[in-house]
Amino acid sequence: MDLTIRPTPHWLRWGIFPMVLAVGCLMGTHRLAAQDAPQIIDEAALNQLTQPDPAAGGSVDDASDKPMGIDILSLISKGGVFMIPIGVMSLLVVTLGAERLFALRGGRLVPSALNRKLEMLSDPIDTFDPEVAYQACRRHPSPTARVVASLLLRTGRPLAEIERIASEAAQREADRLAGPIRWLYLATAITPLMGLLGTVWGMIRAFHDTTQLAAGQNKAEYLAEGIYVALVTTLAGLIVAIPAAILAHHFEGCLTRAFHRIEEICFLVAPGLERFTGRMRLDFDGRLVPLTSAKPPVAPPAERPSSKPPGMATKSPASPVR
Image (cartoon, rainbow, N blue to C red; front, side, top):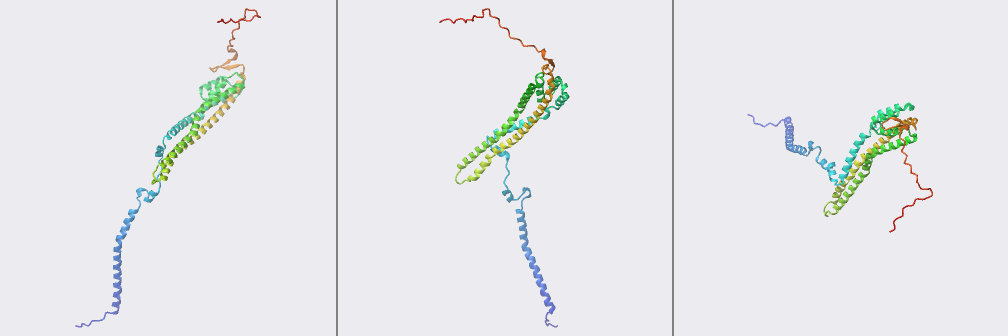
């Protein structure tokens, strides 16, 4: 049996070394991966914890940096007693605005049926019938009907006097309809002053309370809070005054246009009454009657002639001597 140790072949010696090196590298890589796996899991868990909650709608930093919204109701409650008159004026503006929107409609001021009837009676003007026109005014009560009726009741008077009476009647109707609008102008003028008064008082209170704070307290923050609360009354006053001004100008324009139309109708009707001047008049029942049918005025009783001679003066009784 030959026990002689033979040398390792050259190709085998150089082939094993690369295999051992490769196996060592693989084992080292696996060990490093095993060491790094817990670290990756920890980072993933940490990232999941630091991610913002989708239900919250934003990150923690965004929520802390974003200022809170203004609660209008809480500000109104902090406005103080000066918010009470401003609230009353706001109710007044809403009520008058709704009422005037209904009352100053074109169909209520100048009814289209009455307008067509008067235009038909005035064409031609020589055949104008005051009786029919007066009955049409009574069937369509409106500012136009009242002005035209006052004009028709002056039938038989001179034309200049009739036109003057119609202008006065139109002015009375305009003043009556413009009465509620004056309250809107009052709200426009006085409500911002109410708000300004509340703001000045609130700022006085804020500065006064700031001077009473201790030395270590934040006076700037306290003062800022007092000022922005005090400005609520000015904001409320402007919110009420601006719509009131818009409504007042709108209603004034509606009145102006309506009464321009009423004046045109009066100028259309008035020439039709000229042919009755001095001959006929219209009574309160809407019937034409002759002017001569009126009862003559009762003459004052004549003085009884004196029985004494004309040269003698009447002596007054002497006063008794005391």
